[in-house]
Amino acid sequence: MSEDERDDDDPDASDVPDLVQTICPMCGGGGMIADPKMAVIGGVARTVDNGRPCPLCSTEGHLPGLVPPV
Image (tube, rainbow, N blue to C red):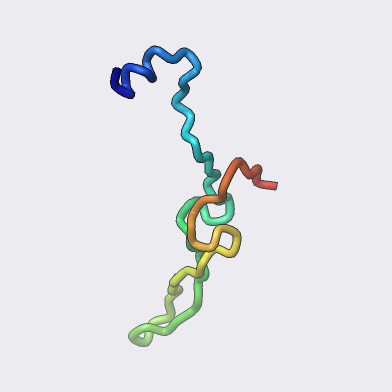
């Protein structure tokens, strides 16, 4: 019997992954936070956004387990 057939026969099998993760509420899963700076480029004042690493998730974009944004 193949693994797929065993999963179909098992009524307790679910589609929930073994590892549950929460998308980081601080960076939205991107791993970087906007960090706009004022710059003069070619004689014109502009806003440059290089971004900075998210301190909450350490650029991973997700947190292990279920973490409510409080």
